[in-house]
Image 1 (tube, rainbow, N blue to C red):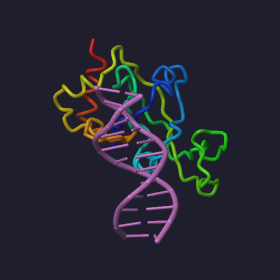
Image 2: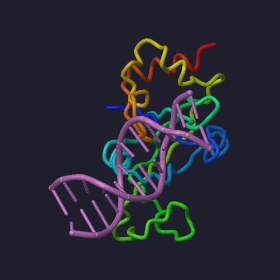
Image 3: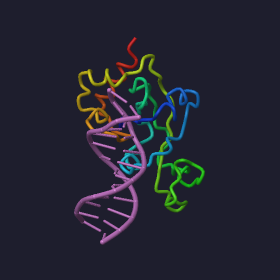
Length: 154
DNA sequence: GCCAACGTTGGC
DNA sequence: GCCAACGTTGGC
């Protein structure tokens, strides 16, 4: 059963253009247990992800990717020079996991948070709910299709 | 840069 | 195991 996800990144940190250039990347640096659990326990190869830029102008969905590898230990947690270093992590117990994602689409015009808020069918989108800060959230198939249609609209 | 909302930490 | 203090996120 294919699932759908919305995954946030600050474009100054890693953007849709970086992914387009790299084609494939590790989604490293997630240090929130709920988000980790989604990646570790629920994501499957072939799932679709919406690439959301936060703290952006404008914030919103900028493109789409697919999950190509799951349950990858996040090596940045073991690297003392990394901003994502976690002294509690070890080879035996990595604590943090990531997935590998592969570029699919960059939207000509981003689907901004403004558009998301005003689109029928997205009233319950997790990332629009008050106080929602989670960097990885599930998206329903219908929500995914609404956003893709907005993004790929000519 | 502000600040509301949330997650995490650590003393007890 | 409670909860106050602190740190972070992210829209505005």
